[in-house]
Image 1: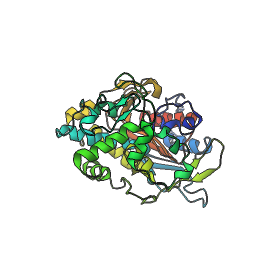
Image 2 (image 1 turned 90 degrees about the vertical axis):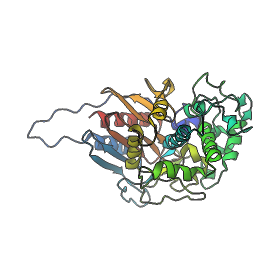
Image 3 (image 1 turned 180 degrees about the horizontal axis):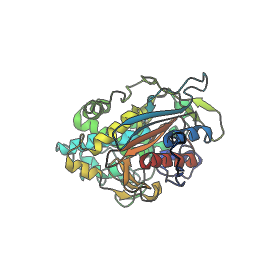
Length: 384
């Protein structure tokens, strides 16, 4: 789902359209301790506790892989506000726009197989599909879809998706979502600017189905999930609303200050190839690690994926490739990932060139300040 672009309307700011917020707070330095003192507090646990205690997140979960290759999981808060149940360790979460790299990987695999051309017009595969005010699929390339430089408006800005509460269990056909985008005016001429739009990945999902002749979810499972053994990750089946494995409950506030409703169960068809994947923090770390180490794409296509354009809207130094972004770390180097927001989850994380990885999730959609603290927590986990 829409993950990154700042929005001006009240609804856009409500969901922040799933922006990967710029890191804005200075990292907290840990004071040195004497040899006889108690063990140094774990910075990741401290950050999760603060997200719950100070920012009001119902629950926070994390998985971290350190320089030594060892992984550790964390929890804070409660898994169910109604019962006070504990947060399941490494519980399943809706990964939101972390789905986009899964989709991009499948498209790039098709490129490697010679079935799709990155710089070929979308109309070559989906003739006549993209037509509207300033919108023409004959002038939009596959690369522009994956890099958000197509100018396609976001289907999540259509009136039918203005309020998530009444559509919690509603099924949407992909074409219905696309029609909501095509009723809007193009954001800009293809290739002349950058703007995050979920419509790009909706079209990418339709392209995958057209080229392979198979359902989108089946292709993601075969080409990505099963290939690298992600045991707790899946694309929900049509009509599937509940999470399959232990998970914390997740909550949506219809407006700032409004009571939170339990939005754990939902029909994810409104997110589909832009944001429907269910996963865990540990599986997300495994996915990004496999991606960066070349287990999912040939070297040529991975290099294309990592060829980025500047996207200062996402924060200082942030750049966007083909379904993946890079962000500078305070300790030097980059973290590669994406981040994601569902209607009631937000995730931040990524991996480094030397194999460190972190994924942090909260169980409601926080405001921009809290999102910055999540981004800071990622930096702290990778730079500790």
